[in-house]
Amino acid sequence: MLLEKGGSMKFLKQKMKEKKMSQIELAVKLGVSDSSVSKWLRWGVKVPHKYHEKICKELGCKLGELND
Image 1 (cartoon, rainbow, N blue to C red):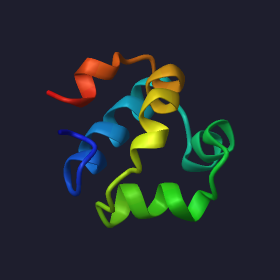
Image 2: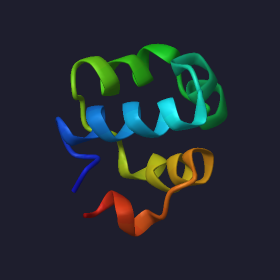
Image 3: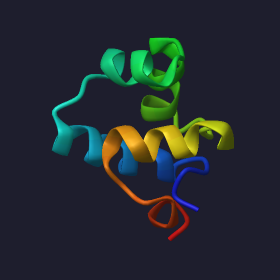
Image 4: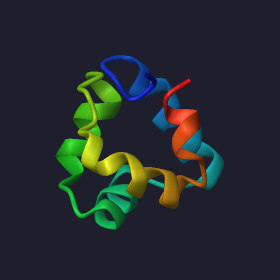
């Protein structure tokens, strides 16, 4: 799963770059702190499952893509 430890970093960075979205913007849209998004991106901390659907909505991906 891409949103497990390590995989989330590359996937989220790629999708955010495509959408020209900052960490702070994504954090606001997800209702989390910018430090949470930073941990996902910089340290590869696992993204909680409850945010997967919101991430897909905001970054324009399908939930199935997160599981590839």
